[in-house]
Image (tube, rainbow, N blue to C red; front, side):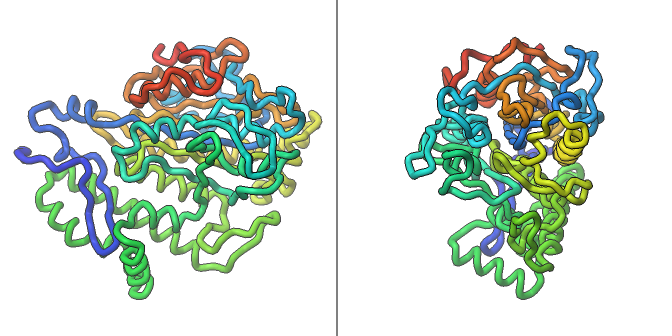
Length: 450
């Protein structure tokens, strides 16, 4: 079927209080250009920043060889199928997460400095101060292109006041996104609330009415846009119809998983009470949030996201992988083999979920490539070894090719104490964000393009 018409990229399927964005379809591409060329020009670069707390077991993280000829250590083994889609970066540092005269509080500083590269003011009062984070620099310049300028996700509820780490406000430990130097951006951890935010539109009354009707009549959100979807399918070619059906099936599957997690009583694990919409299974919680981020990127609802796997200094326990002790407590391992083994198990669990996210991105076709090809996903921490509380030689994975501007499949070793913000500055360039410096950056990070 020849295409002699074009639908706008910002097309939504609409119903009462509902708007479902569409994935990239051939029908959205300029008809005058070949599909591959048009898709390459149309597909935006998406960035996401995953923060992990308490550092890692570096002996089982850092590859021994650099360049393309390296073996993945045990913690990175879940990335084996994705080896050609990512780089392992070694040598990066966050100087502003160090004490620099401020004494204890490395965990709080590590979260506050992770995306800002700025020294947080030591206070547990209202006079918090850090810096604008890389994600919010991007949101301020390119966020107007999408429904959401940015999307802040996480797995642990945080506090915005009080003392959480040696005189540092809980606002530092609970947030990595900072809209201004005094304003952190709170994350959302409830899958239901994220889902409704992604796919709801209109006044609060309309949204509430839509949710109430779905609950009362046990309807899917897709039922509210079925007429729009039916009319659109009539106009699409076979390839686009299949892509649309796959996308909507993904929306429905997530909706069903959220509903399943809500059919239980509120639980308390390791002293943390989870709201009713949050799955009891931490892995399922993690994957649900990742799946919704995939949909948000696929539907161009946002191009920028942050994801806190845990709050700074998180003491969550992991009994389901035979680690009943708290994560932060274990991170002070004193080089004990048994404790280091448990930290490795936690690191491996987190990496398995991250690998799931990357595989989901790679499964989505976009033009002649994949959604992952048009992403730059950073995964790491501002603490290397939790026992030493060091902020140099940090564990960092950079996944995706950022629209073919990053050469992947390598372990890149940088000079010691190279600012992490040099990486972030280079990623802003690839997203079309114009900024000369960021936090303590000293220039662009070299070597990403080969």
